[in-house]
Length: 74
Image (spheres, helix red, strand yellow):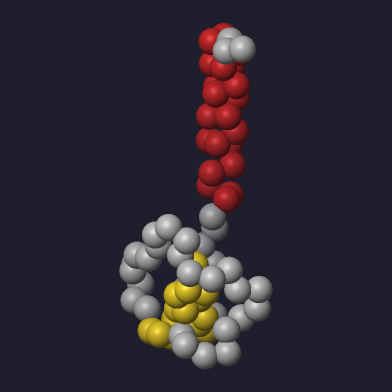
């Protein structure tokens, strides 16, 4: 059953929580150097031994059933 009043109260509380916590969710502590990616449609359970390719900062990836492992120096 849909209750408009309850729905509005929940969203209001979520917005308030987001304003409080959003600055704490992602705190930049540094950047990866020599970043490499391994793309696969498989759900691997361990880090691949080889097959990593260089990836540029800001590169996009993804799609249906796509996975990516990242490696780099921090």
